[in-house]
Image 1 (cartoon, one colour):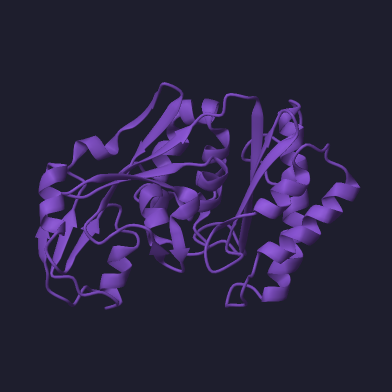
Image 2: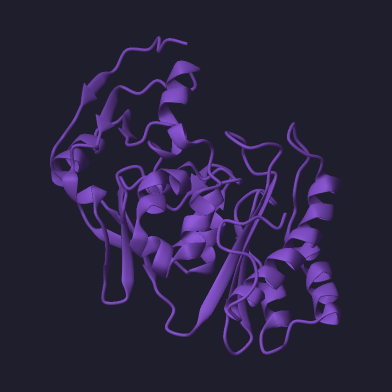
Length: 294
């Protein structure tokens, strides 16, 4: 399908130059392009200017320093999968990345672009939320640091302002022993959006963080379920209470991929399996990262 609208294409090499261009009305940022190009082809957007930021080298940096991971806004899902540092220090992140679309898409799609699209099923959202990640954004006037737990404002809506660019995503490596699991429900292998996604981080000392995608109008942290779990050993009685509580926090819809009832049913199964897998991994047992239990 061809792109039928006309626009100016610019490829700045400096962030400041890109921000100046973005300050003009009708400008759109192009990074991986897996979202914007589709919208252009389907005539869903008609920008005056497309600003390709792939020439800004500083945005491609992936580094770990002072116990903090910095993911530049041009870092792709494949970059994260291929990184030994990510596999060693943030295996939950690597596990999630491998579930995203197809290899061809992962080679171009960026994790920053994934959260900027803010679709309810964005796989990266749940994992970033349990890590309490922060999104670093910049405009010509100032820089901001936004908690990913406050990033999503609704379907395809974020805290990002029109004149701002995401420069990186930061994650602090938890200092205490931890392990996680990302459970994704999809119809088939390949380029399918999540019917439901649940991320869990389990910490020594019986504390937990839980987040979900595709189970509401926006990605969410399951704070009520976390509160029930925290300070308690995982048991069948506790799991039953957690599953019941989780259903009060999510609000899935029915669509072409799944009915509302099926999502509610599967959310109960997924949270139980994800918690058990995370706890097993914490104990040095359980499934290997990347091995599915759903």
